[in-house]
Picture 1 (cartoon, helix red, strand yellow):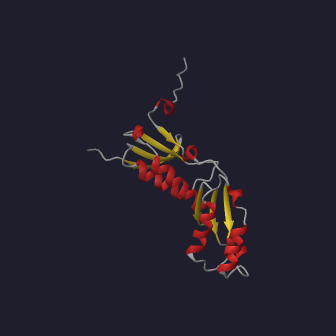
Picture 2 (cartoon, rainbow, N blue to C red):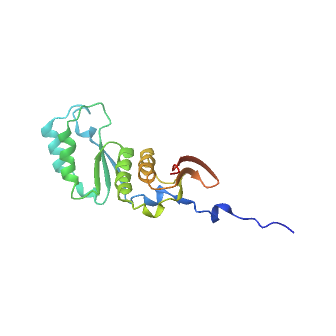
Length: 170
């Protein structure tokens, strides 16, 4: 007589939270302004404005755009602001920085809107591996959102998780 194999993970109250499930859909674009600068380093206002006016901004329809400058040029804030005014009617979101900054901003918005009340006093495991670009900051933002609500927090997979937090007993 063999003993029945019981899947304790499947029978537990453990809830898996996957940030990848909340990934904002849409194309990400890195817009580098270096080509609009004299020799890639000097922003000449009249030339910069001319480039902005003649650029086809409609190609960014429905996209997430990160504005950056890959050279060591000193770019005044108004330059990014100007480009944002052109992008605003088309892009879903515009940020200054790299693609990781863009992902962090997107996840900040997503996590701030999450209703986590259904996770109250439950053990939660934050899934670690993902196929989509989930920035490290998103995990920290998620912990900030979940910790006041959940019974415990772990990271990884149910079969090999790392404990992060356990609510103190009252």
